[in-house]
Length: 387
Ligand SMILES: Cc1cc2nc3c(=O)[nH]c(=O)nc-3n(C[C@H](O)[C@H](O)[C@H](O)COP(=O)(O)O)c2cc1C
Image 1 (cartoon, rainbow, N blue to C red):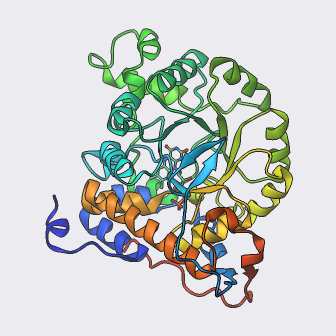
Image 2 (cartoon, helix red, strand yellow; image 1 turned 45 degrees about the vertical axis):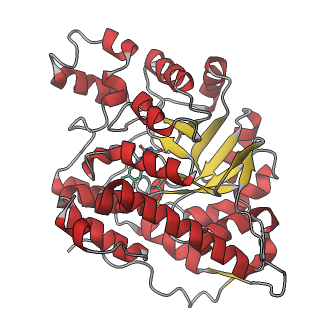
């Protein structure tokens, strides 16, 4: 426990959590989490886009009893948000994903484990037990390794596979390039690979003997720039689990995804960490929902900070949202307890916001509760994060 986390009560606002995280961890690690690609215009646009929409509440609707659960493919989820896959959480706290998973379980929030987690998918699953969890796949250019990861996830009880499709290559992240910091190159995301029997078979020497060569191999296979729509069928043959694509922005891609028979989409621009200049994720949400027409679940992330953001995204057509940076700042500032507080605060904020919108359930939210605000009225978003 850092001195900061011992003496101060936990904060409420996103800006304050971010500030606490900045005080608690190394500059390089904080920058890695807080930064985006290039000029960071897309990262900023994600938050600004929420300011361009306002809620239009209705009153006198009896909101004494409320329910924020949602259902995806008939599976009930206690909250309308899940924890986004965030890799290498060990850079902000020694307990990394294990602490986040424990907090998620305590509050019934579904957890999505990243391929490049600091701990193995099996270790994370054993923290989660029966609490819902999905596995995020970076589809490796080595199909044997991809297959092995998916089969391990299925065996460990993950109930959906999220294929991240906006990472053909890693984004051009100027602030990380300036600090010279790459946790992937340092091996912070290697656990799932170094423990994988198929990955290990492909090495001349095991990672315990020649870590450098094992890491080099990992870096060569982790992404798959050659991936196309035609490849998706091969994953369907491997697993009966629902398959979601994360990182879809273009409505034409939503059509292609439907043609390919995927089970869900996540509208996301990776928190502005991939293509700088890409559209704000919220601006891509309605066009995608209009194509999908409720045939499969559409989830959303990138810029969700507070309860009203969740209400807005769902009112636009999302079935649920993913929470990203806010819970990582909670982890950095206070480990498992920090994440628990962030989640508890968001749950309470969603509950209050739902009631004050005049609705009792998430299902009742629709486009009648949102209006586009005056274009000049965007207001400040978050505070500057690095000196
Ligand atoms: C530090 C960090 C690491 C991330 N790692 C992954 C990852 O391993 N896999 C993935 O699909 N997305 C990853 N993401 C993207 C998140 O899943 C999510 O799309 C993003 O955080 C949403 O933006 P927001 O946090 O600004 O709301 C990462 C994001 C951050 C900030």
